[in-house]
Amino acid sequence: MLLFRRNICLFIAVLLLSSIHHVAAQSSYYIEEPKLFTGGLVLGGNFSQIDGDNFAGYNKAGLNAGGIVYVRIDEHIAASLEILYSQKGSRARDPIAVATGYSYSDYRISLNYAEIPVMINYVNKRKSNFGLGFSYSRLAFSSESFTSYPAQIFDESQYPFKKSDLNFLIGGNFHLWKGLLLNIRYQYSLFSIRNSLPQTSENAPQFNNMWVVRLMYLFM
Image 1 (spheres, rainbow, N blue to C red):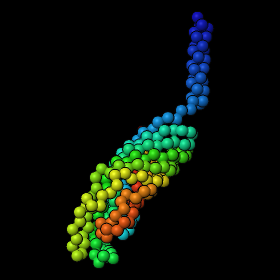
Image 2 (image 1 turned 120 degrees about the vertical axis):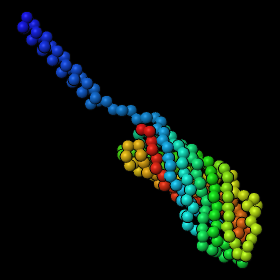
Image 3 (image 1 turned 90 degrees about the horizontal axis):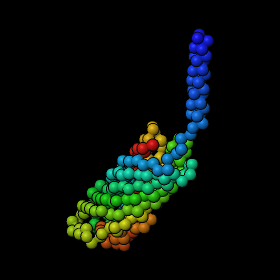
Image 4 (image 1 turned 60 degrees about the vertical axis):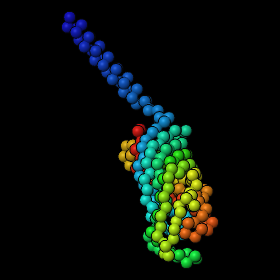
């Protein structure tokens, strides 16, 4: 009877050790398959100017917010699609004088877009990535104002901005912690957003010129 108990105990011990070894072997060979789709949220700011408006400086700050989806193409390559609310424009306080004899100051342009960027990204082992692409923006509403001397009547409807804006994009995401990344991006209009200046009534093409700084959280 004592021998039987010893054999039973030995059998149970061997069975437990075999099970532990089997589980350990499985875990050592288990590799998590990367996700095909990864989604997230983005929130940050635009720092923009409009080239061609006679003012310089990335002085116009605006909101950049929305969602993003990555689609894995290869081990280190992923495409991304975003849907954003993006505020662009121009802002200047210092006065400038133009050939017509007028002086302008406190110039403000606010352009509010629904924007869809599409990019191809290279992703490294630390989950940081670098990408190139394009974005299509649709103008929702805009406003423009300035102070002139001598005083000038300004009819904004005479100088409308184009409804569409196509941009070239280049940027990088730097992995900070878990699903949190810091995004820095530069973008520029490929086609003019307006061809007339209200200050001078000249045919001068204007382009959105912008830096973007955002935080991105991906649901890994």
